[in-house]
Length: 447
Image (cartoon, rainbow, N blue to C red; front, side, top):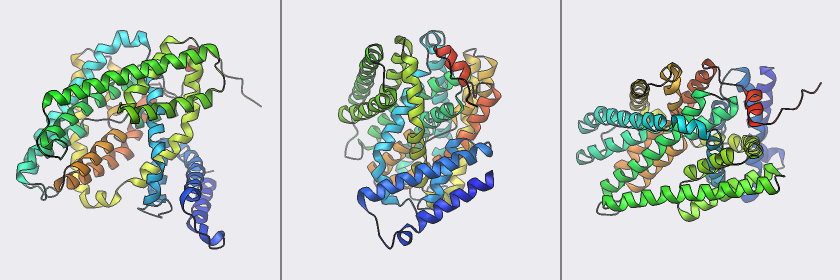
């Protein structure tokens, strides 16, 4: 079976790599090229998912590797200028992932575990941030290989940025693995909640650090009170918009409740548009929407199931394009420093989670496995790295290259580690249990 899937993928790559020849010398640009690329990714992603299942790998890892092979780093079938034309997919993927994350958090669970999750998230961010800062400030200050282009006076700022981004985890990768494995249980719910908390904390921290360094690269540092006011306003409006959108979804479910796949897609599009137009946090907005629908609508399970079904093609395209956009040249140039960064980060993540779970009297399961859900990095950390590259002239590009190289390692290893943790916890592949708990019965198997 594996040989058939490899053969199918080979045929697809050969056709796409020689498409102009097969179509009589025609070349494609604009909408035609985007459409053909989209079809290639979806078809290739389908066979990759089958191959990944056979090899006991997370589907996410398969999509990433498919993107690397098809992208500029290898066969260049997905060309770099073409990747930018799929920016809408990135927004939709974050919306779908955040809706799924919010829909996994139960109000009763939040009342019981909310303070504990917040505590674990805060302790984790503090310890990882402090540890990376203490390790890398001396290395940057004394010109360790890889940091030679960072000025001496910028050592503190560079180390602060590395520490902040190192404290992030990936809701995108975490949510995708939970969606793939249909995981339900204590480890799943705590990981999803804490990952979101961690990223919200880090986004606020990163904003203040960047403002302190150079006011976004445009002169004097911004006043701290202005930065805090902007963060609080963005958070508050994101929560409010998510609650209102959740109430609208609940109203639709109660009064109509049909065409759920199309409706859930529309909600994801609206969420992304609102976030862009009103400068809101799409992650926080959609988590709130999913949470409201799950807990305050008797028909919420219909929407949740539609989101889970509709997310698959979005995930295939998003993570394949993420793989295609990975800077493998940066990884080759800075692999040694990036590997040190990765190892230090994972060790600190393990130690911080172990300390926090014991301090807050978490269960033995969380003490043993929770840290594995924090290894992945993707969308948020990658976005912050690109901000560093664009807003800090000179050494910002060097630092962003190093961070992106480390993120590349995390994107490949993190999903594998987390999927195995869910399997060890006995929470993976529980679709039947989850559907019964949500109030609907799966159809009988066909023969």
